[in-house]
Length: 276
Image (tube, rainbow, N blue to C red; front, side):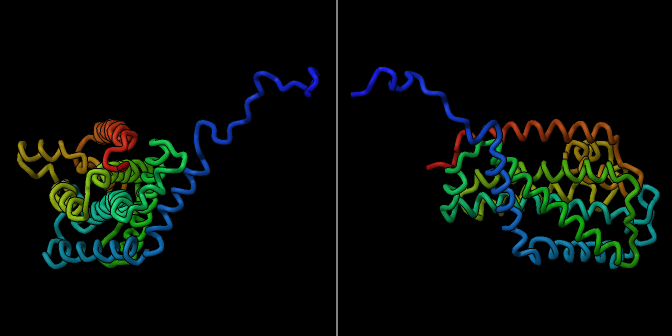
């Protein structure tokens, strides 16, 4: 029999929680998985966009004979270069999150991501972090290629503008990629979103032309495109001139990203199309 002095306490002291408010180890692990996933095929995910972007530059600035035209006070090639850099960044940011989630769903490995003790916010932080990392690696690769290419000058005049608008644009497309990856049931769905939504918004955002030269109606439509504000602000960090008010563009992108983050959080937390 157990003596009275040896009785166990009625309410044992609780243990120390292993995971506090933020699962930093799990977040770091998933982020590294996302980075290693695209870095293992860096010729396709990082350097191929640099070559493709350089071909755009050659075609529009050289083949069309527009090298002597000034837009916003700078040569056309210098105007075009920064826009092509950030265009490659945001397109690859979208591709990273959408393909990561969709491939995991198709292969059935999405359960390996959902089972660990990671909240919806931590999942999104890892996915968006991997996409932004890929976007900046692509941007650095494209900028490096342009820096050594003849006929174009891409010196950075305002690093803060480049950093802010490049990062906000990458986050914007990463969040859209999360929504696409969750919504899509097969690769055709993701391709449709890319071809009919992302590509048109990117190409009609002032990458290849100045919106100020368009009519008032068309210019108003262009200013409603958040991709325009990403490209215009990023380009202003290189050439020192913007096609629209930078303060308004910065605020708009921040509001759009907050709204998209809240929407993505609700979708991921609900498990819609992620959990059987």
